[in-house]
Length: 151
Image 1 (cartoon, rainbow, N blue to C red):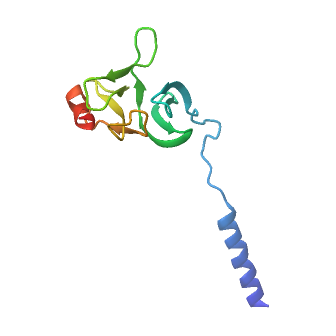
Image 2 (image 1 turned 180 degrees about the vertical axis):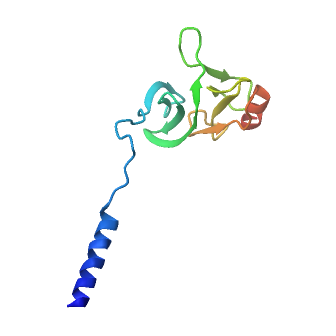
């Protein structure tokens, strides 16, 4: 009888420990979902989609309709022109033609830090793709920093 009571207590404690769910203190707040803010064609089968949730800038590269790769950085926003369009720089003086640069800026930077992404085809002789996204590894990128990815 004592064993049954002990087993019962152990079982109740196990169920109570496993069955509980951790909840946030404020369940009414949720982070906004990523929204597509722009879409660009890169070659005949490649497509670049730019997404944002107001905090995260995310680039998604599709090839043949399938997600090929994605990269993103939090606390950034896309650089836009005076008309509000996202700036995509086209690089034509490279061994790979074309190559593109998507620029974002650090929303909290006091000195103008930016995050740049370079898009270029894997093969020099096939500008239609598949493509690659590389994040430029400096906080104040320049065209010289981009050159190492595409030359």
